[in-house]
Amino acid sequence: MTTHRAAVCGSPIRHSLSPVLHDAAYRALGLTNWTYGRIHIEAEELAEWVHSLDDSWRGLSLTMPLKEAAFAVAHTVSEVAEAVGAINTLVRDDDGWSGHNTDVYGIVRALAEAGVTDITHAVVVGSGATARSALAALAEVGALDVSLMVRAAVRPDTASVARLLGLGQLSVPMGRWPEDVDVVIGTVPPHAYAAMLQHLPRAPHVAAVLDCVYGQGASPLLAAGAAKGYVPVSGTEMLLHQAAEQVRLMTGQAPPVAAMRAALQAATADH
Image 1 (cartoon, helix red, strand yellow):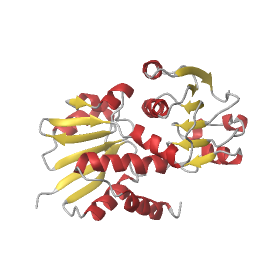
Image 2 (tube, helix red, strand yellow; image 1 turned 30 degrees about the vertical axis):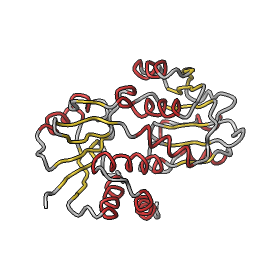
Image 3 (cartoon, helix red, strand yellow; image 1 turned 135 degrees about the horizontal axis):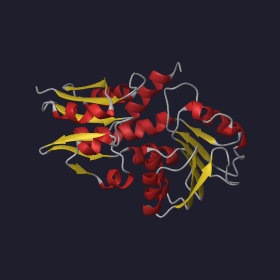
């Protein structure tokens, strides 16, 4: 039986829960010849390393800082990944590696499961690759106005994505919140929030805060959001759904989401 290999790659990578999710999917699907690991790799190393892989390698999940470097590896890129300028998934095919973005799908599903369906005003904290995926997800669910909250200037490529998606994009300084916020999506490390969250307005109705960052300690965004009446949505929810889509892309089989969720809950029960 031919062995198929996959892995999550990035820096840092030790905290990644992706192996928990993919291994659970393989077990549930009976894919005994699939393995999934963690690989620490920097952006400047990615292209040479990927080109050295043999045909047993079938898929790669990419996290920071590889989502932009992956464009140098992929011979074809999905429309979503091209639009947001971020690849988080590489899949082996007959011609090499194709690039995809499942972060957008993961954010859309996480918000839907939180019960937030009517989004007018949203705030995205940060302006990197994950922030661009958040913009695309918000556009997909019909958000009308999105503010990018950043320390200094919004990155030009992120501003371009906002214009491309037709979002009413407004750059606001850290901590200067719009009066009414339906959704807040955080894409920065916990320490970056500092004192800005004390000014978060109370939730006007059913609203949510989603922290895309996990594994770096308690989330100040989720704590502040819950205290102000928002539905807190952990980054592991986004992780679950983006991983499920990766399983579909890599194996060609329908992802066993329930089994993956159970494994994730067991792995995070003590955290």
